[in-house]
Length: 208
Image 1 (spheres, rainbow, N blue to C red):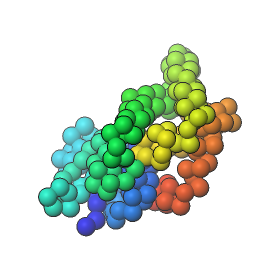
Image 2: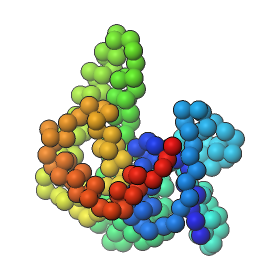
Image 3: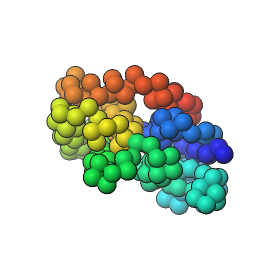
C-alpha cells in the first residue's frame, strides 16, 4: 500500500523522499506549504503534533494497521525497520548509524538552520552576532564530517539512513554559504550520493 508523505522542499523533507526512493517504497506526496502556515492545519496536527514537516502515514504498518510517524529521524528509523534496508541487523554495526543520525538531528540541522535564519534578516546588527556564532559552529560540524569521511566511504561504514539524514542538509550548503571544496572528503561523499539514481529522484520529486 502507498505511504502518504507530508512534506515541503526543505532538508528534512528531502531526507525522507530520498529514503523512500532508495528503499523502493511506493509513496504519495502531500505538500505542506510552510510558507502559508499549512503546518498548523488541524488535519496535519493530528499526525504531527509539533507542527513540523515531514510526517508520514503508513496504511500498512505493523500488524497491517495504519500508523503515522512524525520527526524525520523517527521516520528514517521506522522505514529502515520496515524494509530491513540501510540499518544493519548486527547491533555493533548499528551503533555508528545511530551515532551519525543523532549527530545530524542534534547538531547538523539545528545549526545550519540558524544560519539560514540569520542570513534571512535584513538588519545587519541583528545578523552580526548570530552569523558569527552559527557559521563558526556550522563549519566546525563540516570539519567533523570531513575527518570522519577521510577514513570511511559513508558515515556509518556502509550506506545507511544516517547518510540520507545528513545529505538533506549538505544539499543546502550553498544556502548556508559553505564551499564544499573546503571540505574535500565531504565533497567526495556528496558527489557519490548525488550519483545514485534514487537520490536524484528523491531530490527532484515535487515537494512544493
